[in-house]
Amino acid sequence: MFEKLKRKWSIDSNFQIVIIIIVFSITGSVAVYIAKPVLTFTGLNSENCNLWIYIPIRIFIIFPIYQIMILIIGAIFGQFKFFWNLQKKILRRMGFKNL
Image (tube, rainbow, N blue to C red; front, side):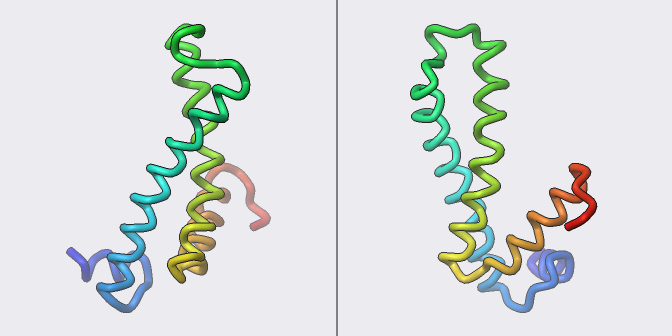
């Protein structure tokens, strides 16, 4: 399993895979944690807003926070190059072809 990931991600060691997986997990938790105060600051919460509106707005807020945090946390763990290349790939798929 690790060999397949190493080929796909163009990385050298199993330790690097473990670090990348740790960065993904920390970033997801941090992004969800930060989104709640951001929404509270805007006055939105699950009690005063319909859930059909609140949940898509929360996801819309979490997405850019996640994209920024993955670069920051990836840099802290020494994997900035990997995550920067991943971000460029994601942005190209979203239509930003000049990256």
